[in-house]
Image (cartoon, rainbow, N blue to C red; front, top):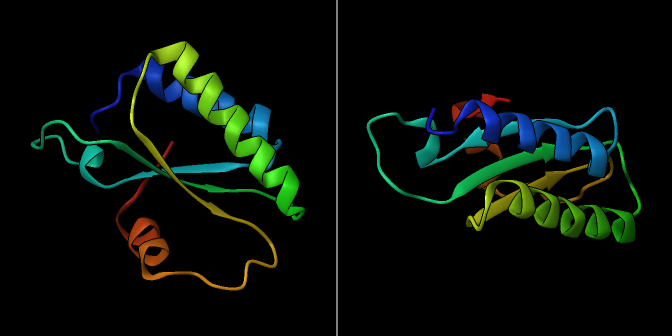
Amino acid sequence: MRLTPNQQRVIRQAALDCFGPGAQVTLFGSRVDDSSRGGDIDLLISTDITNIEEIIRAEIDFQLKVQRAIGEQKIDLLIDYPGRGQHPTIFKIAERTGVSL
């Protein structure tokens, strides 16, 4: 995994702070592969929040919190929540190939 222990800690804590105590974070994509270089930070966050406005606010807060703590990084978020109607294929890929933080 190509995230430092500090980056992992910051991401986990920001997810808990922004998406609630039940939030789960999965890293997927190129940052999971130690032999790759570069790439953005691809995350799947599962939350118990169901209100779309709250989810959007949590996503913005999460991005700000992580950027302030670890510096400017390209972070792509997938957010799963109860009642989400569509799950594009990328969700299955993230669940199958990802690493829990």
